[in-house]
Length: 347
Ligand code: DAH
Image 1 (cartoon, rainbow, N blue to C red):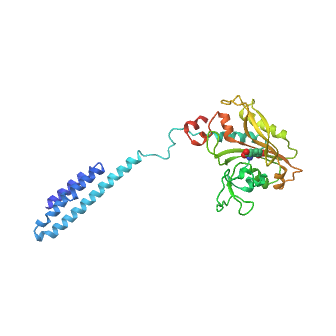
Image 2: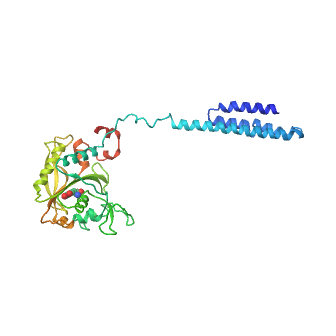
């Protein structure tokens, strides 16, 4: 019996060490310790062993059982480690540079944003930033946009629940509603409240509206805002600056025109159209690109600037629209899909 047990352990040792996978492991386990297994059979023979040998034999069988269990555990651990390794695939050295793809490229919106900021910096503008979560005061009231204006409709604008709180976004009055800014014009107010004129800022950033997505609309898009405050600023200065920036970005053949419009925060107000037929895919003669005007005296009064002394202009435009013109992109959704085939064209 002792010899049989020793032989069984020796055989189990070689067999189990060679098992390649879990089904074969289960089969081998059944052959050894299953109801009809070899060890089970030997244990059943205990009854035939003479009484005085039984304690010694019982000890031996228990030791054999423990030994075989150890061998089974070791084999299972080895098979599991192999399975994990197969799932993980070949070893990776995370310190190596990423394979393929090169060093990456800038997003077309980043390219247009940076180019516009560069063009504006050349004529004295500095980049200003403002929060994407805004309060009604900075987004609307201070911009002379009263509570009954359609832009303030909850169907139009993303409001936060009354319980929301953003510690880093200052409120004018306690309890004021938070919302996702519908335009970058709120940065005009934040900038003017921070310091005295003259002011010359450009503020690019993300904006939000309750729009249903299609080829030309997105609930999340980007704008670029400019504000200039100084003495004796006129519409001529505004037109000259717009002519300069669009000619710089889109080429000297680009023309601009103003159409009278209404914005609460400028008087007079205009919509700006571009003519850039030299660009690829531009079929229409005039394309609307943004809004502008001379800062309304009410807005100046609200931020504590004397409207008798200070004058200024402001404008805002969509960055997507500019990038679409510049690169001949015909669907706004491409900007947000992160399809490398699209993005890599702007290297
Ligand atoms: N905020 C306007 C919009 O989102 C654009 C705009 C119009 C900005 C006139 C201005 C401005 O600064 O003076 O449609």
